[in-house]
Length: 276
Image: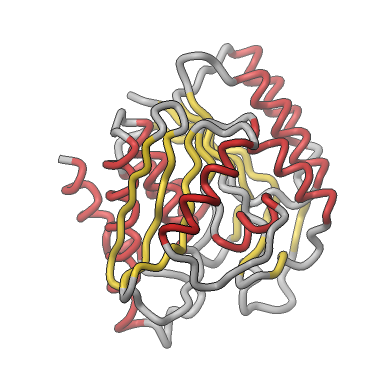
């Protein structure tokens, strides 16, 4: 079996971060280890009064134990990191567990709709920029890409501008950046750039004008799983866009009652079929 590790927070209720990544990557037939960076009673989108326990101090201890066990991973995938200290600790984890025959995926979760998430600072953005330089794949949305590149945010970015942004993201040090939230007429999707071969690839689906929590985590998790299984960049991109679209469409009939996340559970069977 292939083995991946994902490093991000876990919400006890809500569909994002580890509660999305663990079941999706596992459903793809990949042994999935986790390092929780924090434990929350619920995710922060739309809930109030949630509890929060910072696990920053536990991460180096987990990594140290794993090193003593000689654990090895085919993929290392990071999501939400809540502080510059966590970014540095994860950077050290990359140094310890990264190898020539595995790869690193960084989803630089920092913001949306042109704004950083609450509590995020310029220091964290700078740290995330350095972390992305160590990654084989980075998967920012438009907001995150704008902050990483220190350029103005534009809500409706077309494929031409996306390609320019991807070249700039590659100049940060990442070999294969992926940009989500790209628009093409009535379609919505993602564009990727393989800087090694100087090739672009894209995948689109019908745009749905409805905001849903966790879709970025769904996309990044499927993409990571697909690459772990040996899929080429274009195939991994297409699978991630298709499955994310499936989850959105499956959620629409339940959107008023499931406002805290996408109904990805209803689509896991389809994901397994796609992989066949």
